[in-house]
Amino acid sequence: MFYLVALLRFTHAHPTESEINEMVEQNEEIVQTCIKNGFDFKMYLPHYNSTVEWKRHFGEQWGRFVNRKRQFDPKYVLAPGQKIFTRNHQF
View 1 (cartoon, rainbow, N blue to C red):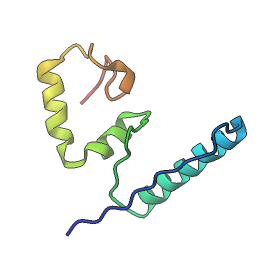
View 2 (view 1 turned 135 degrees about the horizontal axis):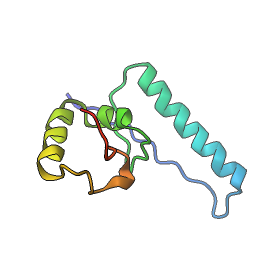
View 3 (view 1 turned 180 degrees about the vertical axis):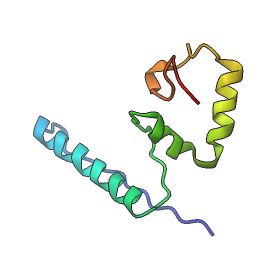
């Protein structure tokens, strides 16, 4: 069985900074509600800020992802901007 619920939100052509901030806060509230209730979800173009968030994103594949990172990028020089691993990362 497969279910998909997608939220694609829009605003008018020239939103104010406060309108943008309000939408960002609402988005974060939606994400936190999903986490709190144990809903499995993925974000399109996610903006995660920690390894914990990325671990949740990868789910069961996290271990495989970590092993590949160790194998192919042992010095952690690739993709530092995604904040998945730090250069002094401890597994």
